[in-house]
Image (cartoon, rainbow, N blue to C red; front, side):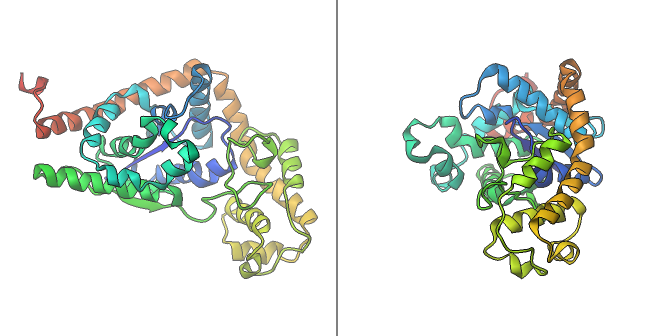
Length: 335
């Protein structure tokens, strides 16, 4: 069976963009693939994290994905730091990947910004750890958005170079599963920016734990323009905020943008926002309630993570032992 690995950062404040762009797709994928879902806390510390908040955010993310429909019995759910095989394989990949490859990574340039020399080595080598996350389990498929495609290409390059360097056909060449419409949900106050938990204003996003009143208020305050909604998708060109709200409506109702506009096209935003609020509350309401219940039971979340980490290492340890043998390390298998 094809095996999926997918990770999510413990950033806290899971929002509608996380749900539509990743979590909902994970729920669908679990029916057709062997799935490994990981909260990537090792990736998180490439920038400084408050230790207390990191633990809280890790549990919150796990609560969110389970509340959305991920079954931790059917799938492997764990946090990355509980399986040291990720870090060990990442070091080997540090010695396989080339500096020129990492220098081309646009996300490092964006995150490091003008202070590149002060960025952590971990942030620079982040893509090698991402490759290790996937290949530690010989993952065959990874769901990716546009912003992760370059990292997946690097993962493929590392697998190919490892195989070539050591004359083996060991690691699979991972295939992407391209996420569909509404994978990029945009900021409610600026339709040119991605919805993010790092924005200072909470009004820029709809959190998965927001109640009906909060959702309605945020949608009512969402930036729009004075024109009514167009009746065809072409009419959304040059109207990023309108395109964002219509895209959210389409994704939440499981329709295309064209089908959505056939239902709401021509309406004023005041009327459309009421419709969108109702749809959003209907989808996120039950998820948010269950998420809050799970967050209040941290020991239960910790038990799920511990069990998932054990299952994960059962898969990764034999693979890493083979890697060590291929590389030429003396290790317990030879004792």
